[in-house]
Image 1 (tube, one colour):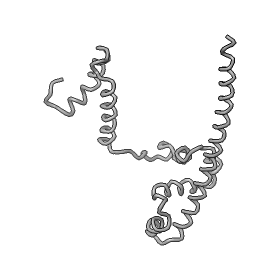
Image 2 (spheres, one colour):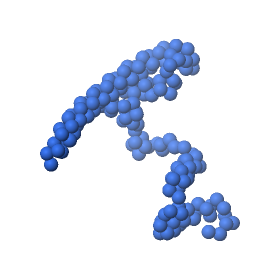
Image 3 (cartoon, one colour):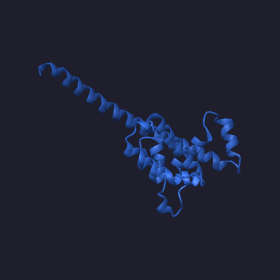
Image 4 (spheres, one colour):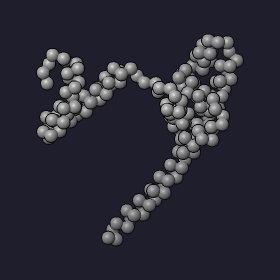
Length: 164
């Protein structure tokens, strides 16, 4: 057992290092979100100063490294100054933007979605990739039967004349 003591020391030291790195990463993420909010404030000021429709041209000419979509995200972050403290704790742009999203039921609007056929095609592509990695022929018979039962309505809808 005494030969395991060095492992305990290394594990404890590494855990302390991990804790310091996590703390540092969270502080860096908060600083990043703060810069993004400031960036958004400047972008909003520029857009407000320009005539309608001139902002994208100005952005591409004067800020070629900043893509329009990212600029729009920054501006969304900066749109509600009352939420800055909450956004600072988000840890990433994605998290901060998620905090800004209202739940669909709260806004009374339907959430934006892809058309059903695109969503379904994407999901089927993922399923096909999964089945390619884990061939159905290697599944237990019970699993194959359940899978067949789940696919039957889809097959009937796509190939109405086919007996399944």
